[in-house]
Image (cartoon, rainbow, N blue to C red; front, side, top):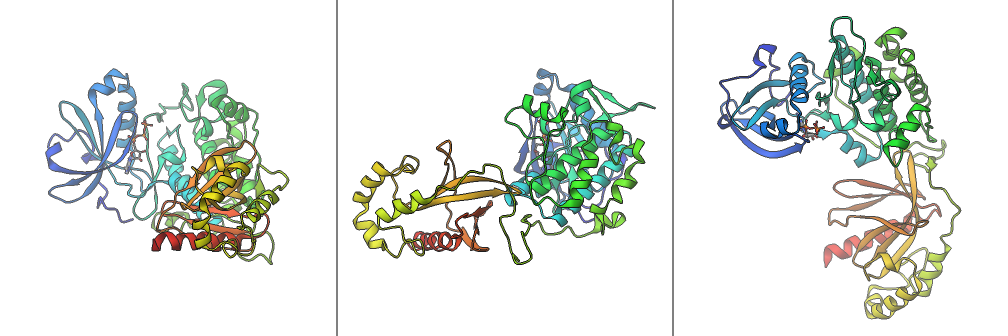
Length: 472
Ligand code: ATP
């Protein structure tokens, strides 16, 4: 696999390299910041190779009593030499800092991609979870448990292959040891044995894999709650559900992973090791041996179709916040302003009339519209209920387009402003079918479902306002 850091180094290169020093590198942008470190893009001035340079402040580490954490991370990194893990090429130090020269994962965290598209389609989820499986198989063969596997710790390199990182809480098992004591991990991916007995096994990483696969496909981890306590309760009671549209083979696999007893999970040593996991139906077609050289699939959202007639996209997913439709208010409201022609909201109110009557309309809007409080005294040009979809989950929201132009969304039950689709001159709107339309912004695509089936109107109106904003 090609890498911007060139050839993989051998282990002899790793270790405190007295020859290297800060001045040998040109430092670029910040790639990320951890609790005890800053990671910078660094170019070796001579070889021109790129690295992710992790810089840890000695004073900070000692003050925060994180010496064992830092030591453990290095011990593990030194042992690892596999394409699906971040690689440590060298370390050095000066009076203030420790420096770790790591392979560069240019594309950042897989979590950002899940957020950007909502959730991955089956092929993408299959591919990326397969890479995680190969990585875990390797890690466990070295008797190392990661203990904090989660999408934030799965980085992507320039070729979009995974680079697992963050070994600060990893555990190297001693001879014959099968478990690690002490509590570590992240609430949503933590295994029940860690919560109940404060022990971690290799299969605790497999539990996290199950949570990640669920999240890849649905957009959310399976045990999701407003706070850690409730999340832990759900985990120990194995309380999770599959949203509508979740693929059957993945369901079967995840229910064989998310099992309370660590020795009953598919993939664990007691259940025959990795083979049964790798040969599960969900992984049909995966060429395990060639995975590191396989071109990763394009990351596409998972938007399962409802029926054969519905070729593009449908709304066949679970509406978590379902409630009866009561969107007629908006049409009444908009008609009262001459804005309410459902086929063409702008037809009955040309831009000239909007401008000339703006003040009057605003006054009336302030008195009569429940949405006025959310829009910074801008005139509402279109508003209606939509299901804002993220992965297989969605939330009902009042989408409000104003003449700023801005696109707000409000929780219509709590009557709370939830956010805004950031208006950008590069954004565009795409119609998928009579209900579904996309608002593409540079950072994210918003998947919206108009339950009244008038997505075309949204597309027309938003497009018109994009064009107006561009030409003004
Ligand atoms: P903490 O230790 O506090 O949990 P962390 O493990 O995320 O934080 P770091 O390993 O210091 O902290 O990484 C900080 C951030 O830097 C990461 O979240 C990631 O976005 C970025 N980063 C880390 N390693 C690399 C790398 N090899 N290539 C590109 N970016 C990286």
